[in-house]
Length: 311
Image (cartoon, rainbow, N blue to C red; front, side):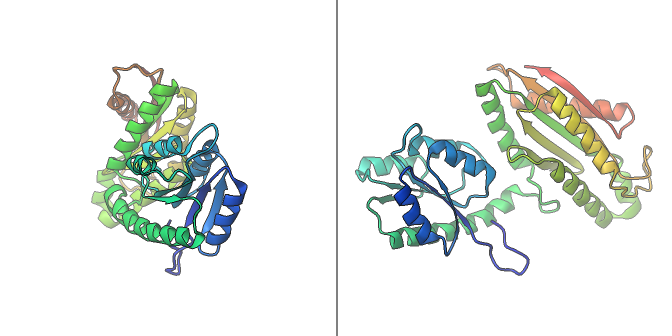
């Protein structure tokens, strides 16, 4: 979680997952003064909390109905968005085999029941401090320094994850490729500082259009951007692609040397895949969107083109 404007850290958020109300209450009372506390009474509810909140650490019971703690941590660690969130198991299963299993699945700690709340608090504090340092390193390796969007490396990781998920679930997956029109001319006319400001403004527009936590917007390289939109069909991605073009136009950011507009504009290519075959590759979807981007440029730029890809 990021710091606020006065340089102080905001409270980090702990998610407590346990089907026993008494345990939820005891741990919440112990941690609430130092952290924002959310609770979940089941594994499915925990995964929903992760999707809809910025969780910094998970305290996870193992023995729960329907979906046990091992299944929950597997789902957490499989998802690139959540895999770096520290998970501490709290369980009445104190056998060494259970602890080893939990640690192998990715837990950072294992606390047996009955637990001492002060011990839990101390362990949480330690792993929160480690998480802050990990986040700084992760930001360096996965965030674009200019636009503060995710970078190409993060995009590739998310694409692979969403591709595999869409193949398992039989759900659609869409990708958008975006290029700022005549950006080299913009840089040549106004200089690189103005060019950097232009890219930041375009990044903020694209970021504002991607509202779902499952979506991904990234700086793909140079003046290129990319969006991953899971479970969005051809009609939906066509609408989003057109909105990208319109919203950047509405910036009215002057471009002194564009052939298509007095303002900065973008060309957009989008592709959707349905019912992904086992032999298909995620790069095919990017290539299809890239080909549509080329078509948009060929047709005069400042527009979008979309295609349904048969995998």
